Image 1: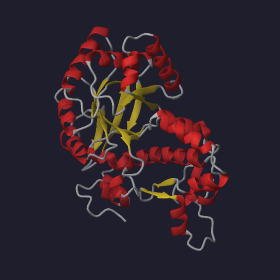
Image 2: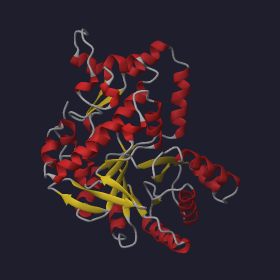
Image 3: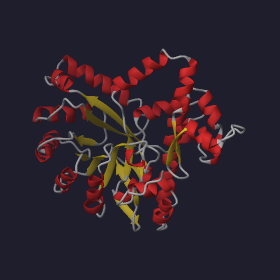
Image 4: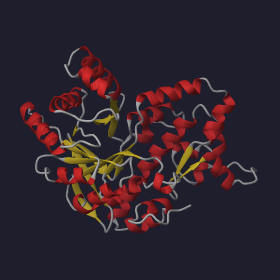
Length: 374
């Protein structure tokens, strides 16, 4: 990574991976989000033509790890499943990220090698060194990954994965041998972000945030910090990916709902507002902005993406079968646009001023979140 300029808070630059340049800060869409973009009737490929990096998140259970450990039929089946899905990410640079269910308590050397091999087979351009939240000896995992890289003459960049501030310290001690840091932020562990800010941000090393919340618990689920993760030294980030069975259960449940029930669900969808970084349910937005229910609130008041340019709160909600895809597509495009704006603000040393104009992001990125917006 090349950090071209950084002001008091944010930093911006460019990544170069396999001769492809990725501007930072940046939002990296997940496979599911690419599918949402394709499903939206308001979005064309040209609307995200500059997106050149995507992430596929894949969940593994302890049972699955056991079944694929011998690299037999089950392994080939999982490998083909992953390859099929990661190929749906229409970008030149891809990353495969492993999430682990709670029954996975450790990743031994055999499992580590297997997961590294899987990433190569899937065509990942960046290879992560998998980690779990309570891994007792991640330093050993890094050493095994380095042995694997040397034995396989692998030239792709290696990324260490941090769940805790201690993980960050371990990865930092190995930056002479690995190329990047990935940090999990879904749990909103600010001590880990502070460790990144204090010890990694001053360095010229790419830092990516996985599983960023769409709406933060510490803001009472009313707002997000979005691309302003950059304040802590985060260069790129991607959103949380739920386990596949959650998506299946949601789809099955939705098929058995009445139109009235689907409409109610659509009203509770959350809209990311780039004006203040709030994440507000559509029905709450409508009641706040249209208390007498006499006008159709245009979403173009808040965002210029193709979804918002052609929709109001009423039209997004009333077309309940497409509410989710359109809402998520808006979110992706808005975050990409905000990334571009923030890059320019950093170049002009205006990051802190721009951050202070975004109520929820400003409070969420403060060291003390005791006065979060209500």
